[in-house]
Image (cartoon, rainbow, N blue to C red; front, side, top):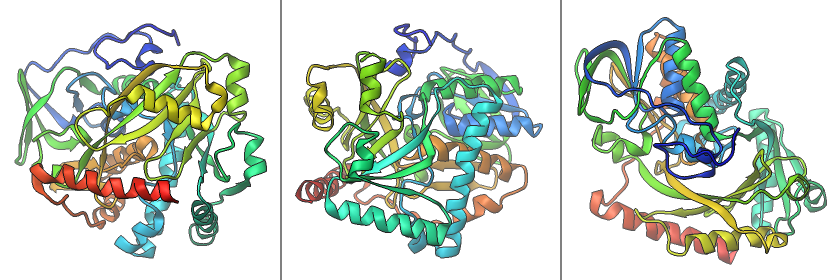
Length: 430
């Protein structure tokens, strides 16, 4: 990767700066036809397009900006088995049997992610290992229970590291221990998205960038309308997540865009960086308003958190993120954040995945709730299989109930801000 080469058409970030320039694909102009039309060139849309093309379908993808422009190219890069909600939440929603199926699907999704990277030779800095770290004793107790439950009920092995064991890998006194998952890990998000796009094009997918969809016309052959063209198809996949913006109002009422932010330090040098996280794992605490961090290939610390439930970045964001980073690593008192960026993730009320069909030929996936690096690819594969006639897995996801956010457009954000303020206070009070 060549560092500090800016990518045109992308929001400023270390991810964009560390990737070589990719020429923009031409926008859709005029009428066109295809078998499957995909809205959104993020992980879900690109994976669905790739899987369908490999099954022999003609596929076209319409992207409003650039490949990976949204959360797929800006996220924290942590790929974790599971979903945005805990397994016991899924048990309450769909019962133990379906919750076990859903968790096993997520394990498949992680395996698919690693296989996709290897098969298509995607250079995205994959690293194994993820640690969930408690700050409060009640969090430690909950994580220990989780390890026992995941082993007994889901046959999923996790490791408990006490504080001394954690200190062998992580140079921070803030945490009481760690739940370590060797099967999860982290990657370079934008590099992965661009690698998926190359693989999809090699399989025959047509990609149109700078082609925002302004209207979805439903029918036996659905039509995606842009300002300059129309794409008709037997099937449509809606993979816009937090950026649907009026295309399917019944989906938007069940999803809330939430801002989250990430910073990157200046290069620390190999020795200093590795002294922070010796085994190069990804780390996240288990507060509601969590911090998460990992190292980059060029020896920066990437540090994220500071979720925001309004449309504007929090005031004093750089200073706040720097304080949070130094609270974890006081030894970085002389280190500043060279890059700072943010974007939206899409959350559901129950934090469970919301995937399914709007009509018999219009499919969607949303509600990754900050847990989408692996599960977005699973969503793409599940939807591709359903379009090809194998809907058993999608049927299980469709059994997850989803309520609308209360308050309508005017009040749902203030109500969510009030609720999140309570959870943040609970974190502070322990």
